[in-house]
Length: 65
Image 1: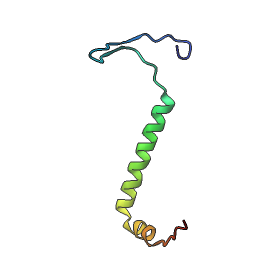
Image 2: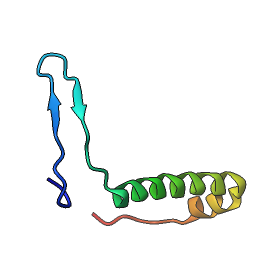
Image 3: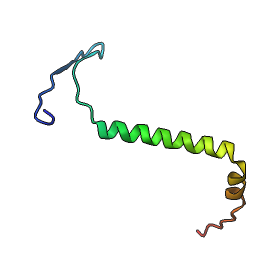
């Protein structure tokens, strides 16, 4: 039961086949799409602006530990 709706499903123990409906969390789907889109956008941006990558590489960080 999710959001006052009952979802029936069955899983075959030998084949692993699943039947029935499942609830979808549109918030989680939107978060995944946004994360993938943002990551792809970041890669494309860095590919088109290599000077940004060079600047990031030039930062000298010393780790203490």
